[in-house]
Length: 441
Image (cartoon, rainbow, N blue to C red):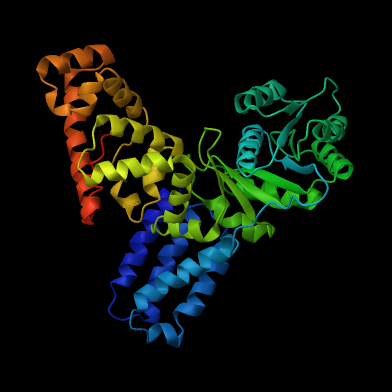
C-alpha cells in the first residue's frame, strides 16, 4: 500500500532535510518532485495543484525560512497538509436512533461490496453490536450464496428472500432484524460494471424506503481515478455519507485514497487491507499520512496487538524472556498471535522506517506453515530444549514435516538469531535488530 509513493516522498524529503539552508529555489525543486510523485500515484490533478499550492505558501513563509530546523519544518507542513487532504480526523459511523440502524453499501460490481459487508459485520460485532447481513443483490450470480457462506463462517445471520424485488428484501430485513434482536442491518446492494439508470433508480428506492443511517460508497482502491469519477456520480444521486476503500493491500498507487475526500467532500471511513474477514481498518487520516511519509503507524500496530494478544500469555512470555528461557514452544505460540494480526509485511510496515528495510525482502506468509509443520514434528522435550536436536533427530523432524533437513537447520539457526534479537529488546539495544534475515520467516 503506497509503497512507490512512500519511497519517492521519502527520497525527496530526505534531500530537503539535508539542506543547510532552505530557499525558495530548493523548495520549488522539492515541490516539483512531490507533484510528480503524486501525479504518478494517480492523484487527481486538481487535488495535486491545490495541495502543492498550500504547501508552497507555508514553506516560503518567514517562520520556516528562519527556523533552526527548516527541513523538519517542511516535512511537518507536508504531513499536516496530507492529513487535511484526507479528512483531518477519523469519521465514525452514525448508528444512533431506534434500532435497527441501517447501513447501505453501494458501488460498482467488483468493488468488493459483498466481502466488505461481512468484514463490517465482524468489525461491528467486536464493538458490541448485533449485525444482520442482507442479500439485496439479486442480479449477480451467486451473490446471495456468497453472502450466506460468509455469514455462516462468522456465525452472523443473513436475510434474503426468493423475490426479485430488492426494495422488498430491504424492507423485510427491518422486521426480521427486530425479531432476531439485531441492532444493525447491513444491506449488500447490486452493482454494475458501469453506472446505469436502472441501478441508480433501484438504489434511490431502497434509500427512500428504509432511510439508512449510513450510506457507504465502496470503491476499489486499485482503480485510481476511475473510482473517484464513479464516486462523484453516486454522490449526485444518493448523497452518500462516507467512503470505503477496498483492496488496499494490493498494487495500489494510492490515488483514490488521496483524492476521494477532496473531490467528494465525504470522509473515508474504512479500508479493506486483505482477504481475511478481519482485514478491515477504520480510516485515520493522521495515521495514513504517517504511513505515506514512511514514519510508520505504531498506534494501529498496538491496537492490532491488543486485539490479538493474550495478555496473560504475554506476561508469562515476558517473565521467560527475563530469565532467558525462551524456547520453540513459546516461539510457536507467538507465531499464532502474529498470524491473528494480519499479513507479516503489513505488520512490519507499520514500524517507522521499515518500508525501506523491507523493500527488497520477501516476506512469505506461507513460511508460517512450514515453520509450524517443523515445530509440530518435534517432541515436547525437543521444543523446550532445542540444544538436544542432533543430526538424527533433525532428519526425523524433516521427514515428519515434509521438509528438508536444511530447512530444519535454517529454522533452528534463525531461532537462535531471534533469541539474540529478544535480548537486544530486553537491553534496549534494538537499533538494526530488524535487518533482513533476522526474522525466521
